[in-house]
Amino acid sequence: MTRRQLIWSRILFAVYLAAVAFLCFGQFSNSQDVPTDLWGIPTDKVVHFLMFFPFPLLACLAFGGYRGKPGQAVLKTALAFLAGCAFAAGTEWVQTRLPYRSGDPVDFQADALALLLSSVIVLLPVLAKHRK
Image 1: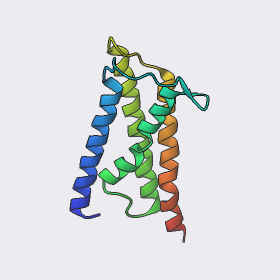
Image 2: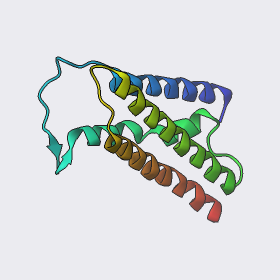
Image 3: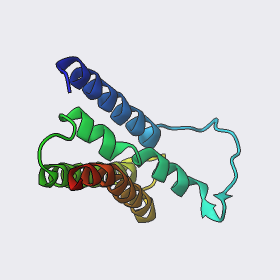
Image 4: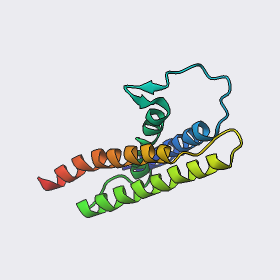
């Protein structure tokens, strides 16, 4: 990864984090009516899943991508997963402190599921490449 790519990856990751924070902490009183569920899953859980799904890939790219041995890729992905979980837990904690929002442990579960699934998806091609 070139220095220019690294800088752009970090800018993209910072913009992503700001967008997630805006969505988690914003006050959206004029929002449109949305369906309460999508395929039997509450819509807000789907949104939480989609918000946190890109985190592992963007975090890993922001910190140099996948270079080196497979163990390093596994470690970097695990750290990205844990950082994502900390960020998700932090957003839920802050929401409990806001008068117009509420924290929900099930939101955190949706976030963590997205982080886990995305981490596995990101890591599989890296491990397959090293396996050859």
